Amino acid sequence: MKIPLGKPYIKKEVVLSEISKVLDRKWISGGPAIGEFEQSVKTYNQDTKNEYVAVSNATVALELALLKLIEEDGYDKDEVIVTSWSWVASAFAVLRVGLKPVWVDVNEYGVPEPSHVERLITNKTKAIILVHQMGIPCDLDEFEKIKNKYNIPIIEDAACAFGAEYKNKKIGNGDNITVYSFQARKCLTTGEGGMLVVPTNNDPEWFRSMRAFGTNISPLKRDTANFLLKEQFDRIGTNFKISDIQASLGIAHLSYFDEEISLRNEAGKYYNDNITKNFSELGVSIANKIPTYCTKYNWQNYHLLLDPIYNRDQIVDAMRKNDIGCKWDIQAIHLEPAINNRNIILHNTEKFHNHGLWLPFFAEITREQQDYVLETLKNVLIKHK
Image (cartoon, rainbow, N blue to C red; front, side, top):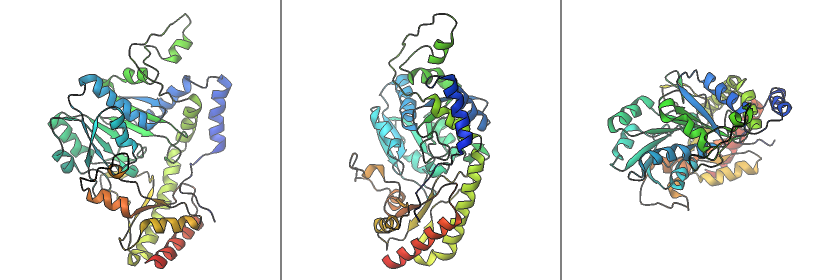
């Protein structure tokens, strides 16, 4: 039995119907499907105040959010507080725009603790990036207090958190620039793709312009005008556009997205029940800890923490040799060769980095598959204990 780590929840007929609309229009780039997708996400979030800007991926969305801050006040403040326990994009975006990451540890939920972030603020702090890791929200009310106290902007890295809720409110439906990822393993996917949620006071048109080389007229407006409308370039932008085909996949997927979250919830609870009953004596604990303020969890991944008696990499390797798409945990960015900063100690980050792992997890995983994963994991742990 071969079980992948993840698999997108694609209803082929629904998706092909939406893609066919794009193909029939023969407008596969810069067309109306992009705006339709943006509006669909905004409607899903029940958001009445922010603007939504689709881009090619969440990494460039982070870069754009940071570039906007640089355009406003230059490099006099060049520090960005960010967690190390995240996909490398969260910090690489900081470095690629010429800023400096300041590493903060995560708490038991895998997200930054407000008091820890506050201790790192200096007169050089340009922004705080809050990573809602694995779809688990940060404590946004507490961070809002810090934002207002120090007048420091917050960027929410919600790459994994689309559909999750903080106190009955969708992540992104707030007052901060927020970025989503729609990469293949994300709950909502367009294959590759991303989106910015931009408060209106942060000039959404700047982001629309920058994603399309800095144009002062959107490609759609130019190409639908009934007179010659020539664009000009008011700023030096780049090509961060998403295609209409990708957008149509997102529109289709969003139409049954809540069904997917329900299936993920059932699968997560099944794992939880079995791990709690059968694995505690083997030194395995559930790492998907959900804070009470998270009123809806999207179950982006299924995360376990192993006792240090195990060599985590050996366990992952053994699972993979049994055709199970197990994965080592999110790596600590500050320890990666490109950074190699070993002068700081981030206790929880390094604990997850060294001892965490992911089990196969996706909406359509069957109970038979989950039972095989759990049985194999138990046998592997007993063998390596």
